[in-house]
Image (cartoon, rainbow, N blue to C red):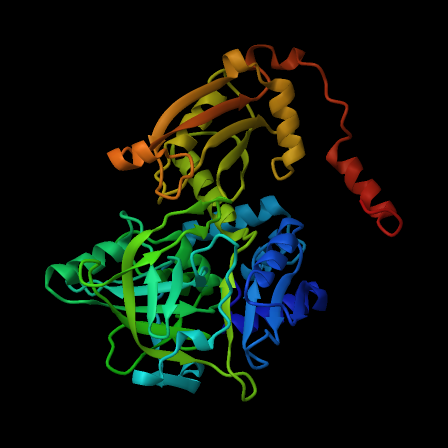
Length: 476
């Protein structure tokens, strides 16, 4: 695992290991929709990471970094793997690492680059930063996308780090939308029950290990800072802001500090926002963060590089595939050749080598039974080992040629999440948070597997030989 000092160190690594074109500097794009649309267009093509500068209305150096882990190659760099590591080997590396990881607590330091600039009291101004309006239908400018939201349990002292969308509601107000089953909301409710506002810090702009760990969530009682330390191989450098017992990364780009009262005391209309599902979700009154301090770095005398948005982000699907693989093994599924996720994690694909008639269904049921933290996995597909599950065209070919819809498809019901666009208004009002999931057996029927028509695809060893021989001439 690479020990990234901060987000800038990661950017330097991308340029060093993948070439200068891997991080494209774009000057003059407007914060209002233009940055969002450029990000969307290039993320769809698995294009470069994007560093927006000279944003109209803001001084040079007030930058926005987007699509920061939008390809498997960038994920490999984030994990400290060779840049040319195959997609399935990235999954294997993450899976193997998760099995041997030992949490390492953070290291407290007396100062950090995040303290280079401090706004307090009347000087606090969230609008000083070029926060984009990412989509035309968004209900505001979202600075919190790939962010870290830090809270501390008042009973146990447990420090939780999560990811929640955050909208700028004024110079000293930030709204957060927290789903009902999230750790931060449970912690906040403890403060509210005592008649207190919940102390909170929102980190914008951190290295990919911290931002990824914040998004995937550690078990209750385990701090994501400790998990990030285990992934790094050394503790994360943290410090405590004046008057706060919340640890913050010493080298973050921006930290927004404040307190969160209960929604009954102060609320604001939040949303909608174009979520990772590709749909706008949720508009309603949510709690606010009363911001009392903003800390941020500067850049050669000019202020900071700011929000990141995980458009096209590959880190979450890689993690989902990894933990699904672990769960399959723990459930006794044998001869797993790989697991891959599509559309973030809306479709999980499992490759197995069949040794018995029930192997495919065993894999499907085990995958569907994994405990998820609000995930929306809709489709679970199992294929034979000859299918390249990292290529959607190969997966679709298996589904189109090896599935008998009357025999190979099964539908179950399972809990879903509040961002699910398929939940009807009536179901939401009734509190019915369930959805159907589809299990698809796209393997050759085991009973006559050996008699199944042979595929006419060249084997991988010869394909690799041809790629090598013709790589200078053809885009293979």
